[in-house]
Amino acid sequence: MLRGPPRLLKVSVAPVAALAVALLSSLSRCSLLEPDDPAASALSPYFGTKTRYEDANPGLLPDPEAPRRDPELLEDACTPVQLVALIRHGTRYPTAKQIRKLRQLHGLLQARPSGDGRAGPAGGRDLGAALADWPLWYADWMDGQLVEKGRQDMRQLALRLASLFPALFSLENYGRLRLVTSSKHRCVDSGAAFLQGLWEHYHPGLPPPDVADMECGPPRINDKLMRFFDHCEKFLTEVEKNATALYHVEAFKTGPEMQNILKKVAATLQVPVNNLNADLIQVAFFTCSFDLAIKGVKSPWCDVFDIDDAKVLEYLNDLKQYWKRGYGYTINSRSSCTLFQDIFQHLDKAIEQKQRVK
Image (tube, rainbow, N blue to C red; front, side):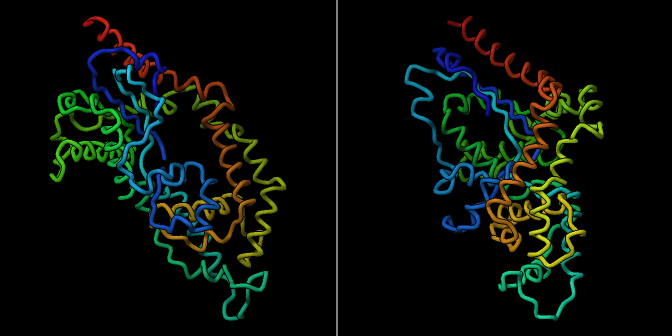
């Protein structure tokens, strides 16, 4: 979420509700595991955007609908004027590309010679056999779509925000609410679930109508604003479609840190190391997070890696995001200027309107 400078919240005026929900790319996760599960708590901090929201904010576990705020965030003298929130979509399925890689890895495990009674490299269970038997329930049609847990994420977020800012989210202001989303189905569906959460806040116990029939209207699709990187020719030319833009990432994939993990995983799963690559290792790591997030189960994929492996894989993912979306290239940040200009224009307009009615 983006907040304006604290002084913007100190304008003593009647509140206005204008919420721009910008739903960009892919996260959140589920809380069905025992909270003291050692494997989940050990690997979860390294999943990046595949981390369950509950693991990033443990306060959600006892009551995911209860609002929590720093007591110093809003002093008694402050009156919220406007809320503009930039929100990521809820928990999603893996993409079709990730599912195909997982299917490839699963096929390698099933193709191993069987029936020889092999144990693991340390004399323990044969983890490769356990993974070969583990159900591969992901299908291509899922392709990054929002899961039910993701809808729950967004409904609960709406309830928390409405409780934190009751004046802004009053029923009188409901018609002023505005949601903007990209055309990605998981983002559109996240916006709809957010509105359903607000309906529950205003009408407890009543089933929500179709979002198209709600007073504030359905989320408005604006890819030029919400997927600004797809509409920036310089970014597309210099980064997205540039085969050499991620050469640092490719170098790390073949570097000693990743090669050590490849050898270790090959020994653990008892498959030829030449059949593995960094992409397959990454998808195995993230499958642990997806199983945890979507189904609330600790799958055998989590047992393939330890903390040291997780740190290397987290770095690999961070490195990619640094060069593709982050500070690696100047155009990465400059391409977002359209979105941030829109955000601050809304904030400035709200302040000006309130100053005129003083």
